[in-house]
Length: 275
Image (tube, helix red, strand yellow):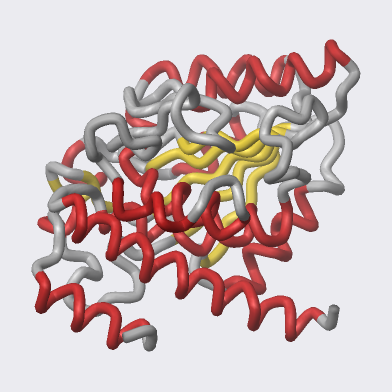
């Protein structure tokens, strides 16, 4: 497939994921649209370009692993998993319902394709470290991908894991930071400054690159580049916009955790061109 056509298809897929994110949260009456929309392009590139997976065999030992450390953004993950065929799309409207396979935070015991339960922030990178070490020790050779929130990197455990990943030269591990600069209590730089992020990760021994997290060409390009890195884990700082794709949600803190009304959902779907 020509590169231009690949990018066009991925952009279209991310739009479909955004629509289903909003429909799910609207049906549930609760959820986290802001962070789900900001990470949608990264999740799209991973599930429709990068990950070596088999939806018919979610437990395949050689599959690549993905961890959504910022677990509250799970509607983006569920939308991608359903689109890839891990479970029927008619399950999406059951988000957050009792006994649903789609809980408000990812649960690996309930959802096909979810390799790790998350929700308590700051732990995803430690889990990714363990998986990447297991890949090396077992000889299975799979790669591990993890997405962290930028508010999440205020957690101390993240930096303990960062040191360990560099010590063991885990070049089969790629981490993204969804750098939308906003968390539930306000701007990250007001709550607890995290900059200079790139310099910090470099100082911890990581190979680092910064990209526009909504530019599909850049996301695909950095995934290609990451596969060429040897002897170091890779950190991709993806600059994103909270609520990306829906004008009245973009960079508005109240959309961190709020469901759209009927009218707001209709307006958002029109903006996405799927109404």
